[in-house]
Amino acid sequence: MSETLAGSAVIVTGATGGIGAAVARMVAAEGVAVVAVDLAVDRLDRLLADLPGAGHRSVAVDLRDLATHDRILDAAGDTGRPLAGLAHLAAVLRRRHRLEDITEEDWDLQVDTNLKATFFLNRAVGLRLAAAGNGGAIVNLSSQGWWTGGLGGSVVYNAAKGGIVSMSRGLARTLAPQRVRVNTVAPGFVDTEMMRAGMTDEQLAASVAMVPLGRMATPDEIADAVVYLLRPGARYVTGATLNVSGGQLMY
Image (tube, rainbow, N blue to C red):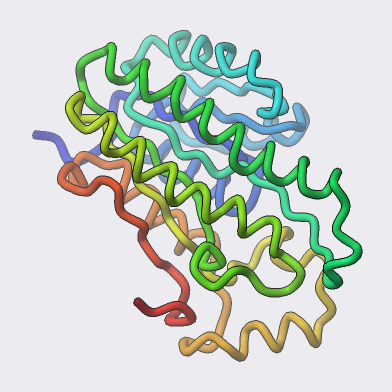
């Protein structure tokens, strides 16, 4: 059995972000047709122009609009390749360092994007993979905050990320008979625009000081974990949460 994803299609959401772009580059380098999903058309165009290989597609949508999920599956079908999986990395973080500053709109934005849209896209892709009969893999991005509760004004964000872990386990059990695997990757601090947004240099330094390895991860280091779980070599891994936090979270 091949241990690579070559010749297949993989959907990558949040594809123009730091981790998303790293995942897209890694799977494209394996001979995968990437279906890149994000909000901004111009950033998607730049990403696709830089990807190795051919057959890539882009879909510019707000995943909170559940009606757009069919467009993503249609784009995967347009590649002419069998769909192998989904790397669902799209997320939004709105930091509020004081609890009294959190609004209902803050809650709705983060929970609808990070949890509600995750479930419905997972369901659509999972059912498509199950119907095809070839198995496949879904990898959702959580956070070390699913366990710790979140730091740096991210309580609502990590409430949703905790929901992703529980939801992914439930989907893993449900889809296992069809050989569709569902796992999560829980990063610690990663050097991305999202991580740095809304934090002073002092707050960022205090966060990094909690990491035993003494630094933030690079996007590629998180992408390595995501791509491992997508590959056929991880065929006996499902319902797992892979902690990639530099030792910040140990369990």
